Amino acid sequence: MTTKFNFENFYSEKSEEQEISGPAHAKYDFAVAYPAPETIPSEGLLEGLKKGLEREGRDLAYYPHSFGSRELREFIKEKLKNDRGIETTIEEILVTHGSGEANNLVIQNLTDPGDTVITEEFVYLGTLNQLQKAKADIVGTKLDDKGIIPEELDKLINKLKSEGKNIKYLYSIPEFQNPTGSTMPSQRRKEVLQILSKHGLPLLEDDCYVDLRFEGESQDSYKSLDETGSVIHVASFSKLIAPGLRMGYVNAPIEIMKRLNYLKTSGPSQFVSLAIENFLKNEMDSHKEKITALLREKRDAMVSSLGENFGGTGVSWTVPEGGCYLWITFPESVDMAALQQECFDEGVGYLAGDRFSPSGKSGTNSARLCFAYETPEMNREGIGKFAEFMRQKKVI
Image 1 (cartoon, rainbow, N blue to C red):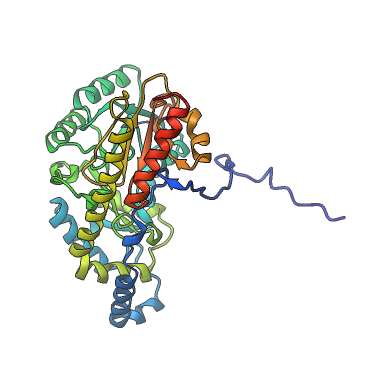
Image 2: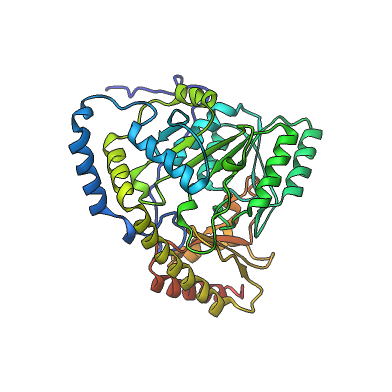
């Protein structure tokens, strides 16, 4: 009999198991982190790829530049200047496999086990997972409906310093924050930068939702307000076009870029780069208009249904000016984590708030609802079904 080989004594010290599972979808899927599937510009991307191949198809014989194609980085440079007020060079732009890789490259370069990283009180699950894998001591700073509260951040930093913590940086999604949907006003961002400067700390700005504004005006990016080079700016094409493209980018001072380059193992797909560059050069504005009009309709459908079904019950929710999510909060006695699976079985998916808490202890009475994926009609129906379930559980 052949003995099966055992790898047990060969794993590295940092190797750990993680269960393998695919995504599960409820009938009314408010748990997913996907944009509107009906806005994916398949024909535009194919046409963009065709134009790109006609221009430089022969170059596919070479491996791509580790920082990404020059043409795409030139486009990103102009986009950062026009959309976010950021003046930069293509040498300070690295194209990555989604904003997730961009964030992870920064996290791996700035974080040693035990280092303290400050995030918002509730933080995007993907980044939270990356910080946990880096063995960071993750501490959330207080939020309100306008994002980080600057005075609370200052108090927190002073407290952590008094405890001897080695604080490395602040990670923040200031525009349509995931999961709460809040947007920080420019004045608060200036105050946050002043606080970080006082304490000698850098900032990792995740700007991946900024293209999805359907109401109000975009606020100044942290990076555009930064005069010292302490802000690392990350953004993505995943929400603007499609997550399946896996294309994002990071903009940072050249000394940081050299460090990111050391850990990056391969350049981005040339096919995807050509498709994105040539599509957006011609159709970015019209594509944004299409997406944002639909997202607004979807948000309005969910918010109006929340008002009809939860109004006057002591339940509150955010009304974001863009992005994909809103944050709903129930009375403190309600355990949304305990109800999540049963609600899913009844056809409505959501993610309980404690999943987004660095400590795992906050937000037990809250949940994130994604309005971007389902149709407006499904958003209305699904919230009605959600309310019906909550009434059955005597939550409302």
